[in-house]
Image 1 (cartoon, one colour):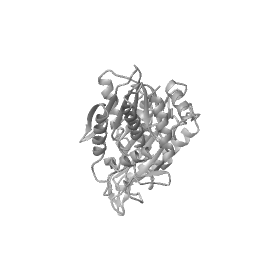
Image 2 (image 1 turned 120 degrees about the vertical axis):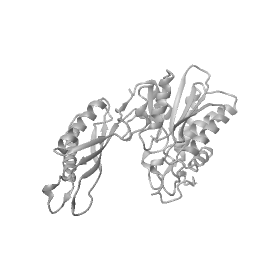
Image 3 (image 1 turned 90 degrees about the horizontal axis):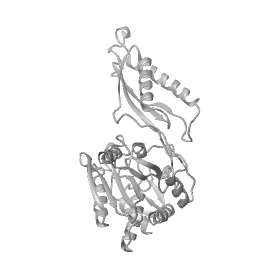
Image 4 (image 1 turned 45 degrees about the vertical axis):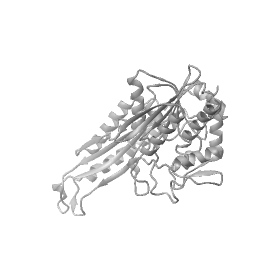
Amino acid sequence: MEIAERVAELVRIPSVNPLHAGPKSGDAGERDLSDWLANHADSLGGDVVVDEVEDGRCNVYARFEGASDRAITVDVHLDTVGVEHMSDDPFDGRIEDGRVYGRGSVDTKPTFAVVLQVLEELRNEGRRPVPTVNLIGTVSEEGGGLLGAARYRDWLLDRGQRVEQMVVAEPTMCAPVHGHKGGIGLDVTVHGHAAHSSKPHLGANALSGAARVVIAIDEEQERLSALDATTPVGKGTVSVTELSGGLARNIIPDACALYVGRRTAPGENIDEVRAALCELIENSAAPLSTTIESLYGDGSPGFYQDPSCSLVTVLAQLADTAPTTADYGSNALRYGEVADELVVFGPGSIDQAHQAVEWVDIGQLERSLDIYRSWFTQ
């Protein structure tokens, strides 16, 4: 039960992304977990760098020197989603029925616990891991544009460093995920002109313009769905997921805001996709004008790693699982420029993530522990 207790300890450290914060979570963000990781890694002999990303939100980079010239990097995001909708105490970390419960128990604190336990075991035995192990804790994965991963990528680029093999921790049932979609998020405002609703001809209805955008986006989704997928990750998708506008029931609305989300498949050019999408929005809203912003960055191309690469092969063999792809996104979207081999991997199921009751199966924790023990000693 030792690994379960370690995960429970981490669950009891709230680290809710500030964009998801509420009365239950408090407003500490990732701060307490960053401090815990830095202190714990230092106590195990790691070379620790604390890197402030913004406003007291810090990445942590811990390097544990190995006995060979190989290196492995494991990225684990520090933040969790919100807890306001959770039905139980989100941070109790209770252990029962072969599970650990609480926010972050599966997404994605287990990998912190697993990696640190293996490193502690080796240290207690007077041994080093065979590869050098870089354990990276990053902020802002669950909201805000993957700022922590982007910062670590830039930190490496500034130093002229690359990553040989990198694992991005997510719950994958210990199957190596070698691809998933990227995405672009556009915050759109359609501009109209207010008037009394008794004389609509004196105004320009922003809701009507937004409605035309919604219809155009639905038609674009139909076009995308008819395309052939070029990889197992699948095809791109697009949808409108937020819409708001109107001043009063007797006023022609002068503005309407909507959010357009475009999932990008591997191989799609992110700049071309963005330009085409913006053109579609502008043309469909016409004759009304639009303002289009990307509040959380310029978007990401899809992630895809050749499943025959060494990293995917080794993890699949150690875990006795088949390589696969995923529907969700991850920090892997920020690391293509610096990682030679990149895989999303971790214990537990994504189906339990973000739920009103979150949990991880202890059997999955123990399996992950065995995998990392083998990987760090070969």
